[in-house]
Image (cartoon, rainbow, N blue to C red):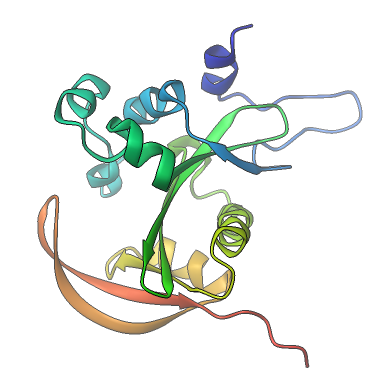
Length: 183
């Protein structure tokens, strides 16, 4: 099986002792062009379709986001599971004293109650990349599913504002990760 075929599988791997969940044993690795091309093929259902990426050929020709090899290497990473399947991606955008996260879980894995594990793996990678920096993210105020996952993963809403997005102006929350304090 080729690596790309392995990353494209969406079925759950089954062993004799247990059913393996695709979000087990996740790790963050450099995003390859193959990962990026696969992510461009993901299709989110309404109302999340605005998270669909443009076609890979368009990303390459415009040299935007992970279509630009330099940006991909500096900011983007793939998240794979223990079977080598691509389960999501992360963007680590460095600001002064802050690392801003962008993330996406493979559409067929959404709404299964496992998003917290996915977010925690990405937060740990952000902490490794920028020790001591604040970790934050922006989320559309209407995306209650994501807000709930982020709150369960240690993020709190610190600000709400309107910002220009690829789809026009939108209201977003800025959420900041709060490390667990010992009791």
